[in-house]
Length: 99
Image (cartoon, rainbow, N blue to C red; front, side):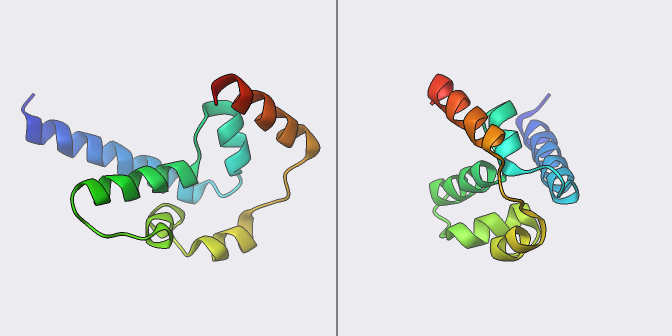
């Protein structure tokens, strides 16, 4: 496979992941962190870092909006729930082990 095709396939998979996460507003970031070690905020940070590596200025909010499909504050107000004590404990344990 040539490099350009590989890049296009990777970009398509990335967009599918982004779109999937935008549709799955029931999945909380803390659950993603506990299970997979990353969340929407991580993805948006990696996106911002990739932009900066290409010399493209991008602020945190712009990068987050690319993953949330709306301003982060709006997503948080609509969909984010308070983390339970069990979720917080799992995060501490997971973060300590992989931190």
